[in-house]
Length: 222
Ligand SMILES: [Zn+2]
Image (tube, rainbow, N blue to C red; front, side):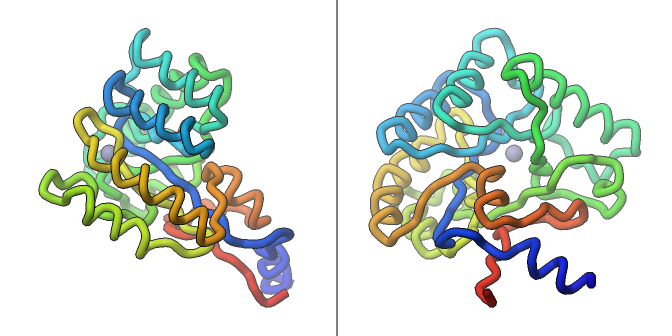
């Protein structure tokens, strides 16, 4: 029963060439604004994992704009610290403070969490009632990784169900430039961009509360 249920749970109903872009470390009014312009230009959505302490009256406008553009907001903690060093109450406070801020601004609580530095200890899966997302990257947090290397990393990481872990922190323009070329190329390969939440729905996959997802599994056995 368990295996049969799992198979059904991840059986896609539609063609499976979906990808999800996601961006960490906003909100901000510089690089994130340009990322939103780029997404609008290419008519694709994304998921923004925001840091609670970066949210203020001004930057909140970009969160609202993102949602208006069909994007989704995820939780990237309050202080962007190493959470494996925290106790249960500290972890829960980080998550709740950020989820409450997100809800206040966009009217909906986040469903997804990206741990800062992907720094996780097993108890955190029990303490945090959100789906943990890692993703595939191109080391775009390193200043020395230039636009061409990011473009190459993005293109070579493409696979059905993949989630991209990218950054829109202030000054990270090379990711905006790389995506401006990558998005049309990936569309040409037949990929459709969706939010992380839509990716699970499109692939008919129920998130597991104890998994750190890079790729939403695609069941091709059907
Ligand atoms: Zn981060």
